Length: 173
Image 1 (cartoon, rainbow, N blue to C red):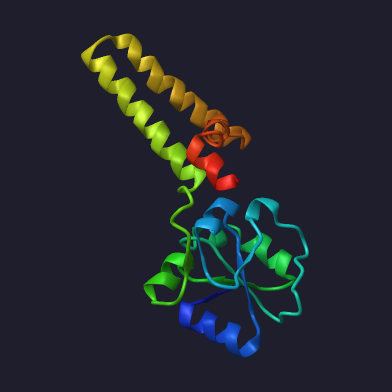
Image 2: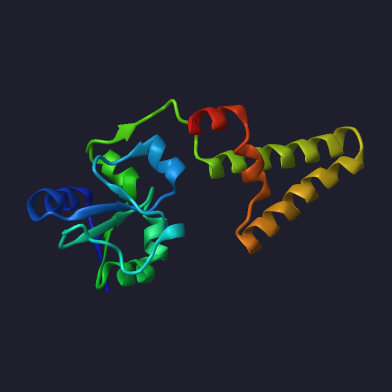
């Protein structure tokens, strides 16, 4: 069973009933912006059962609620019962005016960097193909093939390459 809580109700459960807020986003997302005292347990590394740290209730959140909603069954197993989810995730928490910790010195999340780079390369390939030579369309095809492979295998070569970019390496230091 899945129970959704709005941000105010989640905050009440945390403050009054000792609920533990679990952030299921990736470490780079959590480092850039997070809810105070939320414990990071990325979905990609979620083990079953999850250590409750004496909390009676675990409330899971992601950025928008999409990941937690899609993984509700896995989260319920990890919680040892019902999956309690922060409705709307971090975005709803911020919209409710509740506190967040931000480190704007951190680069944007690596997957967002991949989306920006891939989109830019596709536009570049189409633009150059239309203006200079049709052979440049292959660049867009190459990027598309890379995205299909990344989605199929769960391994993104572009993300690995971007991890070595100077702005990402400084953030890891």
